[in-house]
Structure formats: structure tokens, C-alpha cells
Length: 348
Ligand SMILES: [Zn+2]
Image (cartoon, rainbow, N blue to C red):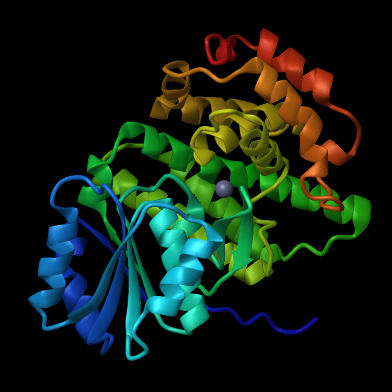
């Protein structure tokens, strides 16, 4: 086995007001000409603050692109239109803009700085980009960001449901690591112990202190970021994605209105924990403490969609061994969503 060598972010800033220091961070990295890819419809003064921070440090904004879609074609079109003397790309906003920015910077072989304005999933710091290709989501290889700048105050102001989604995507890692170890025993899939340990550790730290305040936002951002690093170490999505992600991917394909990724994988993680007979109560307590259940109760899931997704999950990634590969668990999962008292009101 070769020694593991990985890329990690060189710059990490997680604090209140970090957005207003973006220009300082760019100047320190010697990035004088940047392209800004920004989520369309960002609330408040976030875009202006980024602009002010950059211009105030004499960092030239070569191009300012609003990103409203994360299709592969859109990412390619941006890539082809960008000036060649750009020194770095900055992605500012939510999932789509950050995924497109990460992919475009990978194509351009340019340093990329991720500036998430909410923490609804682990995509802001991972070696993959989730883009739409012919109507379906695909994970494409990308590079790890050069920089991660999380303004905890900005993320704190984002809607509660996005925080809950981030909690859900984070808790899914426990299930993913469990599935990974099952795959080792059943199929000999190699487990990178360090990546598995890092992935587990990030979640347990969050579980010990699930507060929605500036310190809690920092903890969630750290958990999600280190999970991205665990994927880079493993050279696969195994530390972050297991059977719960297969169910969520199936839901994305089946549902007329798929919900936030983190809500889907979080709830699926809770269901899978009952099949794996592992940490069900600690996940439930985390969801009690963070208001996760309530966010779903506000807009319940469809039983029919979920039952169909349980059935379809196995075909999402053929050859990817998880607990769902052991036998057909469709009826067991359907029974849990009908009878578990904690899930009352979460499905219609
Ligand atoms: Zn995820």
C-alpha cells in the first residue's frame, strides 16, 4: 500500500465577519485578478460586501457571474467564457454556485476559494462537484478548494432549515462508515482507517454540542469540511455516502419535488440506523436538539415516494455494497416509517 498523500485547503477562515476580509485573504494568496461565481438571488448585502472587500484591497474582479443552475452545460459555458489571466476563482453562496465554481476552477487548473453562505451539505469542501447531466445529478471529479472562508454570522442568518439539512448530511457519515465496514467484510472493499476515523470524529464532536449559535455554526462547518477531507483521503465518497445517500439519490429521481439533500439523507440515516442497529437513539437525540424533525413536519415527505425509493436504491450504484445489499429491506423500512412514534407527522 502506498503512503497516502492528499490535497487539503491551504486557507481556512471560519469566523464572524470573514466575508468582509475576503480581499485581504486574496491579497495574501497573491490573487490579484479573480472571477466571482455567485448564487443568483443571494439575500441582503452579501454580494456587495464581497465586492467591497475585494475592491478595497485592489483585487480586480475580472468577471462576476450569477449562477442559477448547476447543469454541466452551464459550467462548460462559463469555463469557455472566462479570461485566461484570472488568478483565482471564488464561489459565493449556496450549493449550485459552489459546485459550478469548483468544477470550473478544476477545468481551468486555478485555485478556488469557497465562500458558503449556508451549510446545508458537505459540498463546499470536497473533491467532487455535483452537476446536472441530462436531467440527473452526477458527481464529477474536481480539486479540493485552495481556500474555505465561512462567515459564521452570514451562515447563522441563513434559514433554520438549511442548518438542519447540514446536520442531516453530517449525521449520514455514521451510516456511511458503517456501510463501508460492512462492504469490507462482505466484499473486501478496502477501508482507509484514517478517513473512517476522521469521518466519525467530526460527527461525534457535533453531536456532543448541537447548538445553533456562532460556535455551533463553526462546529458544523468544521465537521462538513473535515468530511470532505476524509473523502479526499479515501479517494472515494465512501466516508461520506452510504445506503442513506442511495435512498436520497433514488428520491431525487422519483419525487416530483425532491427536498433538500441533507433533509433526505438525514432522515434516511435515521431509518438505516435501525437496520444497522447502531446509534439510533443518539441520532434521534441530535434531531430533537436541532429541530430536525420539526423542519420535516412543516412539509412532510410522501410515503409513496419513500417506499419506491427503498426499492430503487439498490440500482442507483451497482456494485456499491451497503446494508441494502444484504437482502430486500423494503418492507422493513416501510414498516418503520408507519410505526415509529418519532416519525409521526413526517410522512403523508
Ligand atoms: Zn451528502
